[in-house]
Image 1 (cartoon, rainbow over the protein chains, first blue to last red):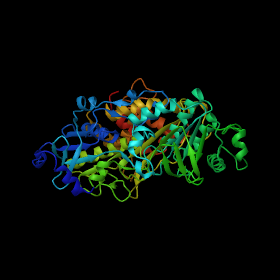
Image 2 (cartoon, one colour; image 1 turned 90 degrees about the vertical axis):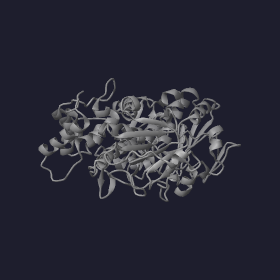
Image 3 (tube, rainbow over the protein chains, first blue to last red; image 1 turned 180 degrees about the vertical axis):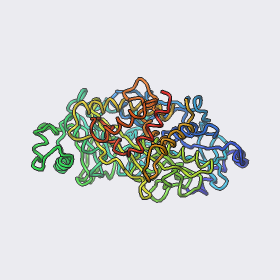
Image 4 (cartoon, rainbow over the protein chains, first blue to last red; image 1 turned 180 degrees about the horizontal axis):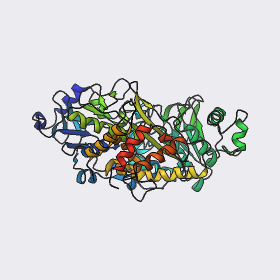
Length: 464
Length: 102
């Protein structure tokens, strides 16, 4: 649907849309409208109010309670419950004076600078912030659909009823059964997520169904945290490190002078960097090179056809390919990649003036599509918008990302980056991104402690 | 408590006074905002595994982060993050946090 059609669609709503209330007369209180109350939108609204409480900020969000996606795989193992994912907008309203509008945007006029909602409201904006997250392309996999995801083969990549369905299915897997996870192609939300989810399911199996298996089918040959995650699988679930990764381990350990030039693959095992596992592995990862790309789902027979053959499973969890949230597409903010091009210093769209796109939907160069990225992007954008409403240029930006990840409840690690603008691109300026392969048990345990602490501190920084 | 614009000003002043570097850097506020995802908004946090940064003396912040960066102090993650910041940037962040009431 292009912008014109979206506007036509908007015409079906009330007459109010024709007479928007304009707040942006010179000298009047500027009005910033935020579409989407996830991490990006909420953080932006809070930090803009902190930067200048005289700006009127309206946050439009379709759900009255936010279900946080980060950490939601912990529901699958019963470590937390669905209700633990709920986040309210109370503090944004009461502490920061953000006006919440629980509604859906159905129309957008970038020339008149208005948006209209399903509830019949029309809002004039001085700046519009769009932070809609992702849309899952269920149909990209033959035989898969949202209806099947809701009833039989859940995705749960946007948390909700599918997450609970998946948790229930995992508990009902017969003794020695198979959990099959279909990993997505790049780029996607939460790069370590599919592999962390696999690990947490394996941990649950270890306790409750020790002969059950986790099979990952993947179109990719690498992923963010692939060395440290596989190291965790190796130590906890009998996983045998692929040869190509053994070589990567040696290369990295030599680079950081943990290994001498003489020490090779044998030293990985002699020094306890990896375990020699002789028994069956609870986790198998079929890479793209090995034919892991999935072609087709047969939900009735619970089989998945990959390039390397047909796999039967008791539970199938598909993380489908994804694109920018639907509203960003309807507003015409996406390019042919399906994501939204932006100016880095402000996250202002390169398509529409005075419209900014935050978080997963944006094209942010080296930044992963993660909650932490959305959070620091929102802060950069909030300072840029506050400056711009005073007629000033945005300041020099700075961003960070940390994705904590678990291979088990007490086994944590991360990818961490500091980003700066270099030659027009958002670039890592902090170097090595991962926990060292010779990290101590204490460091690994602390990684898990910080992962848990982060769930609260991060939610508070965004929403409270 | 200082308001945000005043905090930003404190950071900007520290920047002007504290560095001789030619390359312009982000404000203390901009840089410090990245810490908040773990260490709390404005570095304020309690009852957490993460260290509060609000009100930390400037010298302590700079020394701790420099020790992390140079590997004099072991860490889980902070060594990685510290490597992303120059001396001038650490000073600007430190001035910001020192000016926040804990």
